[in-house]
Image 1: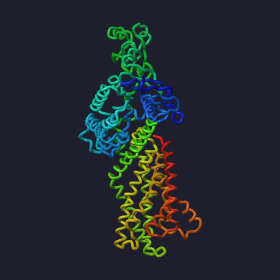
Image 2 (image 1 turned 90 degrees about the horizontal axis):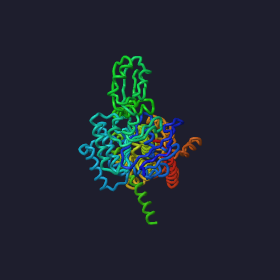
Image 3 (image 1 turned 90 degrees about the vertical axis):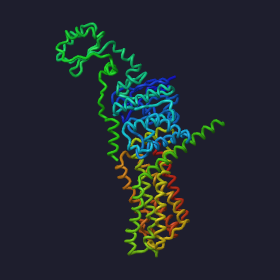
Image 4 (image 1 turned 30 degrees about the vertical axis):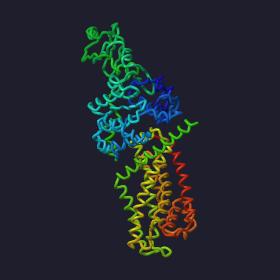
Length: 322
Length: 268
């Protein structure tokens, strides 16, 4: 039985549709990715599954409980690390964790034990008595991951867990997530618009665009759908018809002066393509990525550059606001 | 049957723990922001010494020194302002996204609201206690002649102030639960604070007012707090103390009920 199952989940904000009709299943113990561009409905999905917002229509079961009818049982089963920092920066790291333990009704002795344990896990034991406002963006994220784990949730939600972090912190957080998953039991749901994050971590993923699931499978099976390697060429006035006639070319797509081809055995067949395509400025061959999969299903690319600004930027904004 | 009542007990316990958690956090923050405590003490003292001393040089009220007369009113003023402004912290919680952490926890919104009220009330009562001690000392030194605060007066004052602060914190939280920015909160509350304060009779006796003004003071719930506190501290009042306490507690219960609904409807 899936730990999460949604049934035509729909959410509208003042007539704007954030989720069209979402259907997905997450199995026990897996790391499940929700991949999509900004505004695709990933965060809305998470907020709905964690009972913070009510769906306009449809429902979902989380750990066997209905999100509309049994929100408090759902909340007991889950932990969440929000996209934006949500710890109190006037409190110390330790105090934030203690507060969390109290909110989840953990007996004092168990609470202290878990606080030690999770602080150890995220390497913050020596900084636990510093106020959170003195933490870096990466430290604060680690603290909030520790907090999300403290009550041993059955399901952990991570909303863009590495958004805006430096490569070193990102690598560390990926390692924590992998370690957590290896210990078994817990299911982890990650939203992200970083494809390498999904590639590295997720056993399965759903690609979301404009509030609907366009594809759901393992990363490998989704890439197989592409059916060959991807050749990207920069050409002025490409001879599209000539290329189309080559029988090993599966698909042609032109975007911003770039020609994207899906080609069988691209290494061997490249010569022939270059021969007929026209004057090629540059060419690149790669195995299919999730970006190609996304392009295949939606006709658009997942943009890497987020106009929303990263986590670090938001921490800065908050500070200057205060 | 046994399992069922046990389950209920667990639920109650977790709600109580949730209330304690919210309270814990409010107290930590309050004690850490020293400037907040200092400001909440200094302003009432300026009112008492400068405004009270200045006007008191020319007038006295039914034989009571003017500074002494307004002392209960100034205490209520201090509690009114700090209690209502406490509501701005829920706006901040939303702004720094801390509210999400609390709302996603397995406790009811009523418990969150109750925890916030207790937190805000504790802040106000600590402030009141300091002001009562300052009153005690100023009375003993003869700076405010005729002000005699003893143990009984301080304890009964705290009772009156407790019911006052719970209702005013609730009002602040109700406004805060609807507001998206601290600026908006300040705008709304300043429209509310001054009429409530001026009509309460904190600065003047309400027994000789023209009818239109008297009627307005009667519908201001704070009037009964000022009157009750005057009764407790000075032994002089307009209404019966029992009536004052009934109105204050009744009003407090009503706004707390409204507040639980407001929190139920509150958006993230």
